[in-house]
Length: 187
Image 1: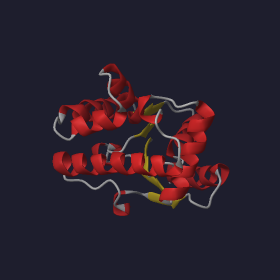
Image 2: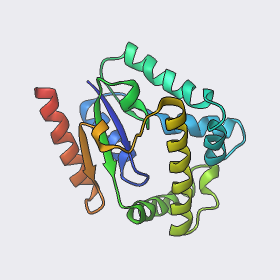
Image 3: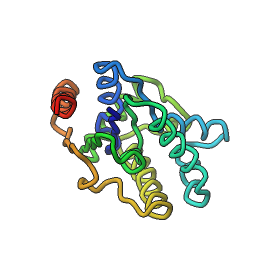
């Protein structure tokens, strides 16, 4: 079974995708890291690189093509991607949502703990910085996906399971998610 994750910034999607992959002993693929690596290679911040993607369709297409190839070659894996639900329509599609401020607080806490993982995080010091950065990234994502694919990744109708994680801890989110997946595997 291919399980695709999408969600709001700070919703816990990376953490939950990792936990699900470990529990099921599936490989996990993370499109966000591919974008970050490409941005760094081009000496750009993630936001700058995504902005470039608004004019150059190949930036998204390279990642999306890679994800589609994985689906042709592998039967069971977890993928975290803003577009995998669209490009792998037979995947089990999961969307985690979170209140904007709660998501920003989680991200800021993580950034402070990890000492900023990449260029786009270095200037982020406050909740307002995180919210502003998240909004820029979301706006760029939405603009590109509408322009190139005519899709809306935030539409709950695109997913098999949507969970609001705002008031839930990681273990609660994991249990609700893995229970849903287990039911689908058994059916």
